[in-house]
Image (cartoon, rainbow, N blue to C red; front, top):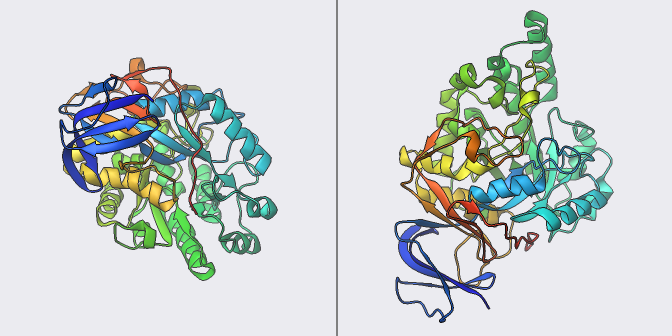
Length: 447
């Protein structure tokens, strides 16, 4: 059995930072040792990690990889490779592809695609509609991360605003309910008002006023009330306002919570002053908002109200994003850069590396009950990332791996760099270069 010894790493795991050697045997972590005290065999491959941080692989619970049906924007092969280059070793993908993942058959087709193409571990949500409760009831709880509900404008028939349907889905209990919360009526009213005053080609800086904080809070607070009434395990996706953090409970143990809060890296990074330079490139749903919202979200990460940091990675072509505001789609590619973005916030003193690991590795594994991942422990899968915390580099067209070929972070210099990414004991990135090797597995959930 192949063995890898990661020697003299600075291990950041379970709220501690220690020097350690990590022995990998096959797909799993065989042991954690004080430096120089491992019992590796003679033929072990040694990785010298002196001065490097060793983290569990990032688990991103919120991506859009666009396959099937939208592969001119992205596909599973390209985006999983970009994710691996950013230290992400597992992803959970959303259902708004073409066709939508609202049946077990389409869910199964996605898993087959990922088994053939993905560089990293994979899983896929099933989208909820007004009419697919039977499909949801038959979902395999060991292989489906959760149900995805759009409580605001979305594609196809996945917008659910029927009270009876919502109660039925919230009462199912077999899987977590992950909600995109924006009130559709408020958004439409705002959209009509702005279109009437400014026409179709309005400035993107109006985006957070059209998809307003009131629209987000009205929907999020309604979802929380419904979850409390129905006893649902609710996952509030990509929260963007200071007000919404008040719906959540402080504390860093998500296993005792029924309402889980997720924040995305772009809401912790950008604020509305960035629209002047970036325009539609930072048009997300829900929107980038005020600096005071960004600051409130950072505080909520630190006090435990926000449990998970994810990406909502959602590529579009530059041509699509260059359309006038109302025609330009929302979303942007960001999964390759999520870890270094959060480590940059550590350099700025806003977060700590231990907290980043908790929110991007430990908590996703805990919240979704992922089997033997998210921590560096003997017997766990060897999903690992080595980071140089002091190796500056700048995002440019030359180092972007997204199929769409652009990033809203172009020109940004980061002080940390992902060096090596290991998935199930296989190095898929070495010295910053993809190896072409694959050992991806479907995520298993122990529920």
